[in-house]
Image (cartoon, rainbow, N blue to C red; front, top):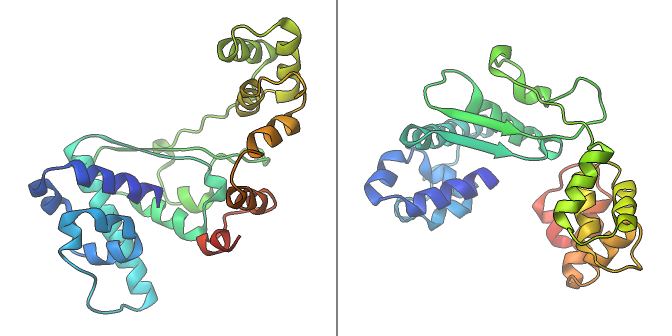
Length: 231
């Protein structure tokens, strides 16, 4: 969905002639799967697909249409696709990304993905990289910030923090830059632990937003949007 959100924004800014040239033949299938694309005039005018395809044929046609659109955009200018938190990706999402990356490499596309894992030597989901030339892959493993790096980060985020506060934040963050940032955002002397900082940030949110966060906090994987909506 995030990928198609970005594609729709590109198409909305592009001249109409370029939009018409980039749209794949199964653009109606694309729009029915990713409604955000209906904002684009050239797509809305073509309407939805006339016939319902069998599931496997529909999947293949959808993947081909996404690939054609993304590769077409990349031919107008080099394209960098950035997808974060691949550990939450479902099987269909990974299969779609893999379809984008498989040969032939006929357009300048660079894919950057991030994921968190507790398993050693696992730097990408196998469903994504199987079948891709290892020479085309580069894995970068990020270690936690060192105490010195953490201090530099806190000093940059809170230049006026005293030494005691800096030490507390560095200890609580445990080398995680996001945790350090959250601790820096809460300028309350009574908030001394990471859990307190997160609660202080969550407390002012609307009740509906807090309910969604409570559901997400206890899940071990990606959730369908319908489940999140019910919360």
